[in-house]
Amino acid sequence: MSMSYLAGSTALLLVDVLNDFLDEKGKLADSIGPMVEKTNLRSQLQRLLEGARKAGVKVFYVPHGFHEHSFDGVKHVLPRWQLALQNKVFWIGEWGAEFYEPLRPVEGDVVISRHRSFNAFEGTDLHEQLRAAKVENVVLAGLTSNTCIQVTGTQALESGFHVTYLTDAVAEFDEAVHKVALEVSYPAFGHEVSTVNGFLSAIVAIGKK
Image (cartoon, rainbow, N blue to C red; front, side, top):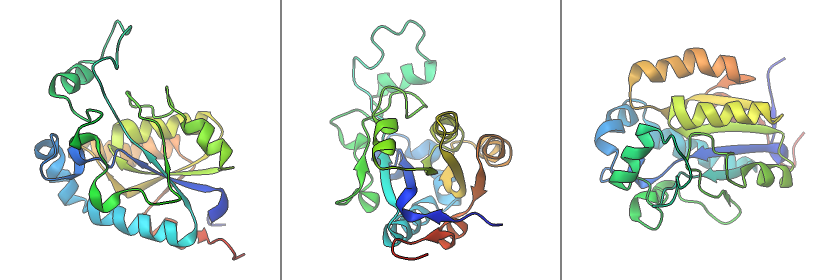
């Protein structure tokens, strides 16, 4: 039997749809831009977002964010995070950390507090907000395939949610790493691995049976 998603108990998690990733002037545009273009990520996310909202699926925005004290008290800061701090990537209060304009939240969407690490549950209100909304199914899309998407999905799995990864609504800096996420990590750490079309066609909209 194919999977179906009841709109009222399903959450679309849009991870890190921020200017530094998706806008042509973003600080990471040069490095991730080629894969964003190759995957047609912007258009795919817009189509996913429109379809999910139309069906009544609750949308959760899950943004990264750094500031000068993000890693105070952390002895072993990942070099990748050190570089992000030096370059003020996703810097809270600056344009790069704002949501990419075509994918901005609207009334009724939920904006989660900013995560500093790959795991968007760590140090945020994501778990609390999902439980408050009586969410059972978590569907992940955004950036990046092998880091925040995969790690957040793994934590969702550990927390008892049904987890779906969408293979054509994510992107990564490196194509080989992207492929590993889609072909190895997602089947290992998700209940379902689907596509935008597959997910949208499987939603049971609010008011329907």
